[in-house]
Length: 143
Image 1 (cartoon, rainbow, N blue to C red):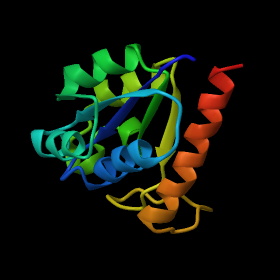
Image 2 (image 1 turned 30 degrees about the vertical axis):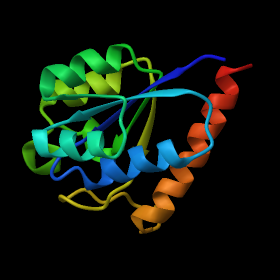
Image 3 (image 1 turned 180 degrees about the vertical axis):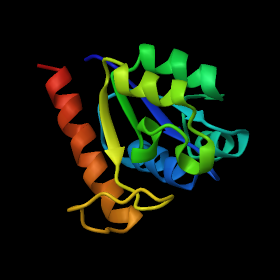
């Protein structure tokens, strides 16, 4: 059984990333290696406390981590330069957008980015849907 390399990226206080890491750790999933990458040290610490296997902080950490990832998870803003109140640099957004990994982007309608046609769901509902998608990706990886 292949261990999927999952990179969870978040910024600000890391609340969304923390919830994602905790939900993935709590779910009955095949082996995942979760690398939490925070745009700042507060976000990194929150995700590490939630159970990430490894953690790193900053632009270069994002650039390096996504090159080895099977899945990249984070708010939609991780592919938009200057998103998350300026924490996502153009290089970070480009690295995430151009990496070979499947990207599971959470539509967070904040910071002047509104995703048209997407229901404004709670973080809990969004993360439940995310966990189901990760389960499907794990099953596909084993085929």
